[in-house]
Length: 633
Image (cartoon, rainbow, N blue to C red; front, side):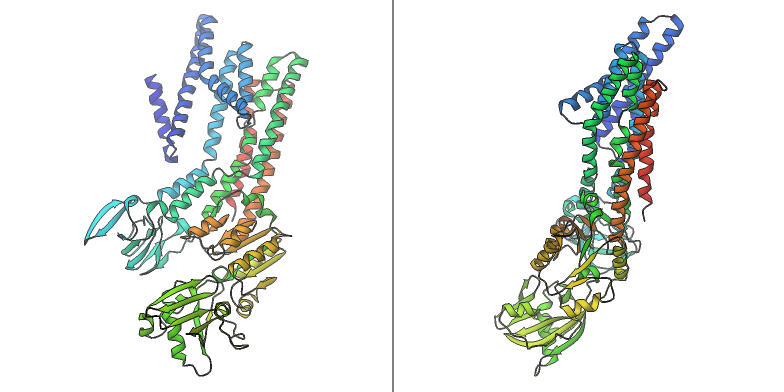
């Protein structure tokens, strides 16, 4: 027995590269031990019977082998019946077949059938391990240690012990263990594990870096912003592990199919036994009808789709990927940060009559320096040193702008759109700023309008191509919703295949617009995951752009793009459609193979033992067909 146990351990070691859980390791080890024992009993029984021409002793060995390999199958089948679920449909049919074999004296078959089926089942599990291997590969990119810089000293510590605010040193070639901000140095970062982008990203002081990425060529110091369990990389891994268990409408279709399939097989087997008076044919039917192929109909394509998506930096969170994405006929885009890069630059400074241009710019800069909004960041490096150094208590008004009050209370500055000024009863002269195609932000000081600043944005290189591909995929309506001005929004979208542009919308206005479109259409919404969180949740399917580092983006959307490649949107629609098509093809394939085997068994063309081997044709056909998804580009 010790030798058998060692054999199991050695066999298990060859699969450790898959990082199996302790429960999975115990199961595989148990399967190997039972298989060796039952096979040994079978061989000893056959040799003894051949040498000594005795049936009693071989019968004892066969019974031990049957109890070792067959009883676990019977127990699993009984548990499946008691739970009133059909997830153990294969074990139910196998259990009936081997018990019938044992009772009719077919002792060799009662061992061989569960042994062959368990080996085949093990190989099937190994062949669809791709999704797990992708996740395990990502997990290996996480780094458990960090070089903590504290009190002028370097110390290697566990990354799990790092606290927000601590500073670590990341040397060239080292992985980054946490999410943080660069405090000194500059380097190139390999972010492919998160974004799917092959080109390294250049980072310098003040820029974000993320766990799971690798520092390539420069030494940097990083201030910890998130503890180990809260990093974007950790949350992505958790979501990927959950997505392994995605249940689609097609999966539930298979469950309903099994509720009719098993009674049908039992009726066919019983009828064949009664009419032919040959129990071996009925046993053969039970064996060949084991629904291995049907069980893989949905799971194999979903794992393949998950792997294909991860390679492109696409995180799929739930079953809407299949259920509703294939039905999409309307697409809603946010503008800033989605169709455009979101990196604004100051393009005009327009004071109102009698106002000094320097005063206008310095007033805006004095409050913008305390805000992280893209428009505020665009003013970095503008204005005088005095304006930057002046300190204000700043309050953000979502979708409108910012309000700043000086420390001594002598100044109140508003920097934002028309809605912000209107909420403070400040009037803007008719037409003032309306002719600008740039995004306009007005500036007031103590209730007096000083003028406006214009900001221009850059359209993403592949935005136009994305819209064209969406139209080709059947998108009847493409809508852009933005908080920007109508003229600015039109200037960005005029050369694209966009049907409607709605401007000057607050987050709640965007939500209402999505609801209206959703009344008659299946809506896909794409946004940056922050200002668009409500719209992403409301849409039939929500896709968050550039979600790396944004917890809200990952939480709000059904699909998160870890990069800013707009062409991943039509790609994921094509992937969903291909996955759905493969699922239906798999169902037809597995059913054809199963019923062909049943027909052959009914006429005695194949035996129960041959059926135990041939019934796996359906499963492998499903796996081979599903692997075509991995070629999706």
